[in-house]
Length: 74
Figure (cartoon, rainbow, N blue to C red):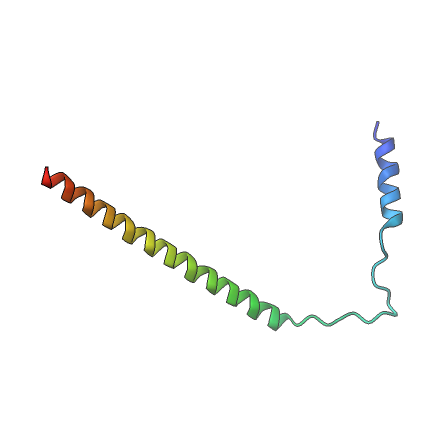
């Protein structure tokens, strides 16, 4: 039943590029720089989210105040 799928997988594996060999030097990963960049993006995301929440709360208070003032006018 799955014979044709196994053949396709074996073809895909045969055409896949080989991993880096031992003779090719592997680039060193600067984990500190990556973590710093991720931290910066996280802080920016938190700041933007906080500003959006504060803005929504402020707008909801404005709308509630206007609705209450309209209710008491009538």
